[in-house]
Structures are given as structure tokens and as C-alpha cells.
Length: 46
Image (cartoon, rainbow, N blue to C red):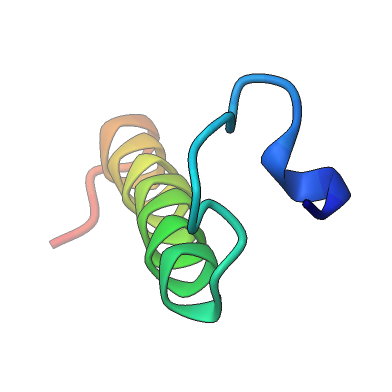
């Protein structure tokens, strides 16, 4: 068991490259979406 399988990620496969990639894409996509939304809300772009 790796260290990544501890804590709240207590299931087998939590540290597989596929799971890490999907999680990273979701997190970075959400952050990018929030930044775009904030810029569009703050400045009347378009």
C-alpha cells in the first residue's frame, strides 16, 4: 500500500495514473472555469 492509499483515499486504485490524471483534469478544469467566469463577470468582455 502506497502513502496515497491512506487518508480519505482508502480504496484500491486510488493512486493509479488513470485516477490521478482524471482528478487533475477535473481540478484544473474547474479552476480554469472559475477564472474565466470571474474575468467575464468583472469585465464586460465580448
